[in-house]
Figure 1 (cartoon, helix red, strand yellow):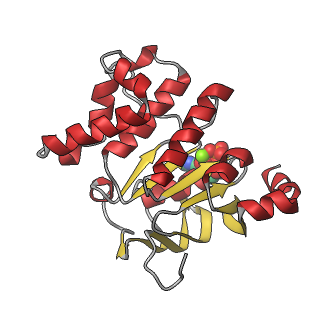
Figure 2 (figure 1 turned 30 degrees about the vertical axis):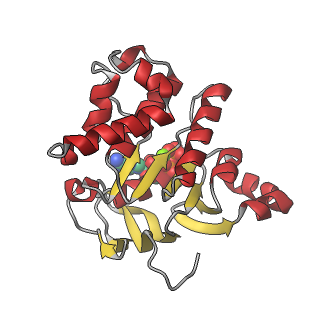
Length: 242
Ligand SMILES: Nc1ncnc2c1ncn2[C@@H]1O[C@H](COP(=O)(O)OP(=O)(O)OP(=O)(O)O)[C@@H](O)[C@H]1O
Ligand SMILES: [Mg+2]
């Protein structure tokens, strides 16, 4: 990406945490327009905390978070969720007693006065994941893990945000379901989406993303391209990821 162009997401000197301790320290990362970037790291590295800080769900203690040049740090979460950023969170967090379509529509709450747009977004989610159209009226608790992850991704897309954040979408999925998720993320890239993908699976990150950050103990410690990973970087990454 050209460095003088305003990125979709720019996180600079971000420090944050819980209680007395910062679990994220001086994090710098950027996602260019239409770029897919991975944030890799072992359990407890602080990946989810970074995503939650971007969403305004964890208070930023130091640093800035720019989305399309506007500083989000300090804004309430509902403002950030209104079209700036949306997340497919760790653990999916669906309303399991509600239907697939109701879960999807929840992602577009801020667009409810524009039902045409909500319809169009719903159609594009069903195009991406045809099985969800088939199960639209089914209670989400009866879906497989892979199908539930598709709903979580679909709900994120329903917000029609500037940047998509995904927190370990491949976790606990069957190989077939991982493949469906990877293909969907590639299709989103093709459609021009900008995304930040938190992953522990290097293979998934390498296939989807054009740049990979590595985070350990709350800090960004390395940055690689998929080419660098394939040309000897894998052993370095494996060491970081433990
Ligand atoms: N709500 C919380 N209160 C206190 N400590 C927390 C809280 N959430 C996370 N932590 C701690 O902050 C650190 C970073 O957690 P975080 O969830 O961001 O890591 P992660 O990289 O997403 O890990 P994983 O891959 O296991 O999801 C961990 O040491 C964790 O125990
Ligand atoms: Mg996490």
